[in-house]
Image (cartoon, rainbow, N blue to C red; front, side):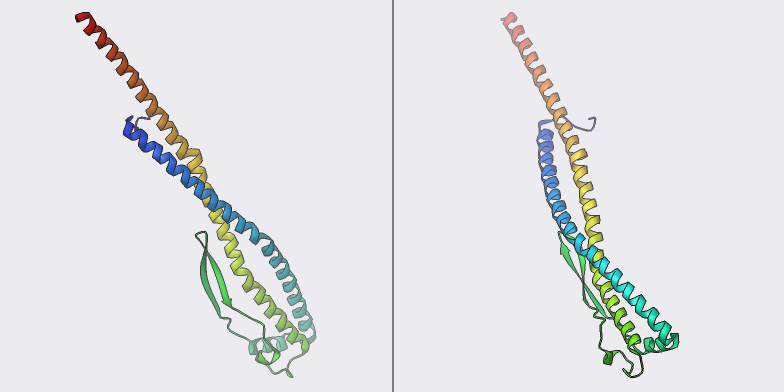
Length: 209
């Protein structure tokens, strides 16, 4: 307490600081609870998305292996070059309780056989099925990206907010309260000393009188 000046002004200041810190901790708790609600709300859909992605990936690999075994790598490579397409994505940010989370527009990878760049008569149904399976896989991955980023950022913000709440409740506020108690004790001691001195002065005057 060496750096604390025990004055009434400081006592009032420290008490105000406690109120501000307690109010800040309360607001941060509300923010953390809201973020946690969003975080938990996202958990189940995210797990379901991962399961769906695993199934789509398994299907895509199986169709690829089947086409590779039946039609050969040259046919598949030729179809892949012909159907190569640039995937254009637009990403924008929105705020969830002060946390920037992404939203993706576009990225629809599914196409009809007529839009894949090769003649429907030049490939087998196996190759076309492989193309369709991987288009589905791309769509699944693209739709998963913003959810993953949002989940991660919410988790990080929850940790950060929790640390700030803990710092206020476990360090800042107790320290301020300790300083208030110290100042109050010193002021009370001074007041008692002043009263004692006043009594002594009064007694001296009475003797002199």
